[in-house]
Structures are given as structure tokens and as C-alpha cells.
Length: 370
Ligand code: SF4
Image 1 (cartoon, helix red, strand yellow):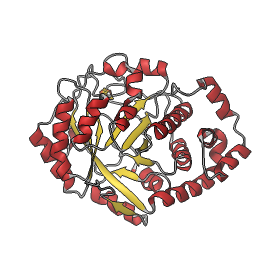
Image 2: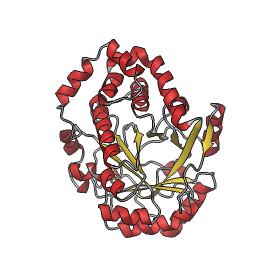
Image 3: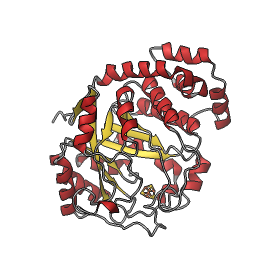
């Protein structure tokens, strides 16, 4: 569990299984929600309330985000990694993945290809390789890309607070770091070696970035590793903590489902569409102001549906292999990477689907004061 929670996993399980229909109805009727409301709304008892939850979540989403849907794309700059995450084909032991770290010229070519699709918000992603993806290198990449994109975010190895300060100065404003699992025992099992085996260091990532000035703090666990309800309870506790400690920043949720990977991993606790939707509805109701993203891991049908009631931010046309947009042009079959893409639509097709829902595509939703 999230370490600052004063309840053990068995107590949280007990609270969730003790939820009654009256408790769900009460949580739905409230204007301001707390952690216990989240438990009520993710419980098994909440299933019959899903239509009402869709209405409440839709109203909350509309209040804070109107009809807008922000779009972004990830740019993988490298996939060498010193970690051993059992569920990822970028792990050091997996020899079946072609490894590549892009040069600055290649990064520019990739960024130009993304930019040509209209995308103005970029997530820079890299494996954890301290020889290559140093703060200095990431800062250089930031300075290269910042003039091209109004929003730059990072999904790389956790850094120190000073490191984040340097990266913020280089142009990055958003940070995503999945805790993967909040269960300390399971975390140890899934991350047997490498710097990522340090649970506490990873858990403090958003706090260090928030203190360094980052304005978007992305949090998530991997859906499929452990029982999702306890993980969701920990994620919510983590978010409440960050909202208090980093009040100038905005928490962003993602709900990434893992799938089988080439290297042989099978998720032990798969999460189906109904449970994923229930969880996202509950988070939108309890955290109406927070950002919520849905990635191309999910199917077009699921994304087009969920973006109307909960998510306000979605990726479009993602490639998850370094070089996948331009450098490896014509070799798209090689896009076997960190996870499998399920929505393979082009950005234009994603924009059309958003507009067909009566929503507006937003490329830029933020401007610096200077
Ligand atoms: S999940 Fe991240 S840290 Fe772990 S092996 Fe994959 S790229 Fe490396």
C-alpha cells in the first residue's frame, strides 16, 4: 500500500468489501469527495450504479474541461535500459528487442514528423540508462524540442530534485512516473535488480519534480500486476498527498493496462473493460479537477467512449519504438516495443473521432507567463 496510508491491505480490502448500496449512493450525491468515497465507488457494490456514475463523471468532466480533448504523442528517444522489470521487453535481459538511442538529429527528425500531424504536446520517453540519458542529455533534448512544442513532458528514470530543476529550466513542465505497483512485496518481485528496485526512491519522484517546479505530475500503477482495487486505493492516497504537498501542480492520472509481451510475461491480474471504466469513473468523480489520460494501449472503441465521460487527454498516432515516426519509416512492423499498441489510427483519424463525438480537439492549452 502507499506507505503513508494508515491502513493495511487487509483493512482496505475489508472496507471495500463492506461497502453497501447506501454508501455508494451517498458518495455519488456528495459535492466534495474524500478517499473513502473512492473506496465506495470502486467497490463491487458500485457496478449497478455505473449509469449514474457516468452521468456524474460526465458532469464533473464538463465542469472542468468542457468539450475539449487535449492530444499528445510520445517520442521514444532510446530503449536501452539497465533495469529488469519482468513485464517489459526493454529490460536488460531481453535480447529480442532491437536497441537504439537516437542522435539529436534523429530526435529532431522524429519531432518534425510528429509536429506535422498537428500535435503540440510531446512526451519524451526513454529507458533507464545512466550512461546515455543523463540530466545533461535530457536537458539538451529539451532545449532542442521546446521551440517546436508548447508543452513538453518527460517519462524517464527518476531524478534528484536538482536534476528536475535543470530539466524544468530546459523546457519540460510535465512528468510521468508510474509506480507500477504500490505493493512493496510485489514491487520487489517485479523489479529484482537495477536502480528501479528502490521502491521509495521511485515513490518520491513526483514530489521532487513538484518541488522543482513541474506543473503536471503524472501518477499511475500498472493494471494487471496486482489486485486493482487496493492499487487504486493507494493511487488515490498518493494523489491526495501530492495535491497537499505540491498544491501549485496538477495531478494527472493514467490507467495503463499491461498485456503479454514478447519476452513471455503474462499479467497475473488482468483488468477487463468494465473494471477499467468503473475505476476511471470513480477517479473522475473524486478528483474532478485532475487531468486524466488514455493512451493508445486501449482500443479505439474504448478510447472514444471513455473520453466523453472521464479522460480529457489522449495520445494520437503513437509510435513506441525509438525512430518509429520518421527514422524507421517504412519499417513499422518493427514497432514491437515496450507495450503493444491497440489503437493504430492516424492522428487525423483520432481527431475526426473526437469531433464526431461533438468534442473539440485541443492542441495547446497552456502558455507560460514569459
Ligand atoms: S519498464 Fe522502464 S525501467 Fe523497466 S525495463 Fe522497461 S524501460 Fe526499463
